[in-house]
Image (cartoon, rainbow, N blue to C red):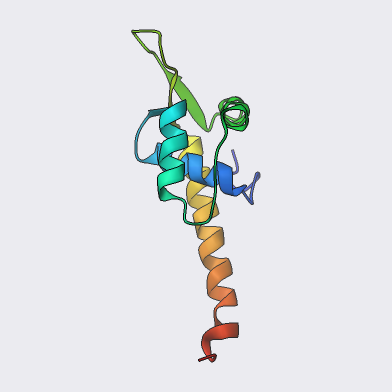
Length: 107
């Protein structure tokens, strides 16, 4: 798998993968974690979240964990998902590095 194949990621995808990189989480936990950490205004509603999680599962970026209680579906990032996240973060860092000189002299 080429981790750059699906770049650039949407802000929603980036934030979900970043939260899951810190550890497994369930849907409501993902909504709250993205809301708490997003200074850029990324918000998740349940319908979009679950549609995104289905797509990420089909791309093998995340997988479901077994829930013994059967109440919540818990998700975790896969090796492929980490590679995509790392590739996107690198792409964004290079983009910012290329753009910063344009405003460096302002003051």
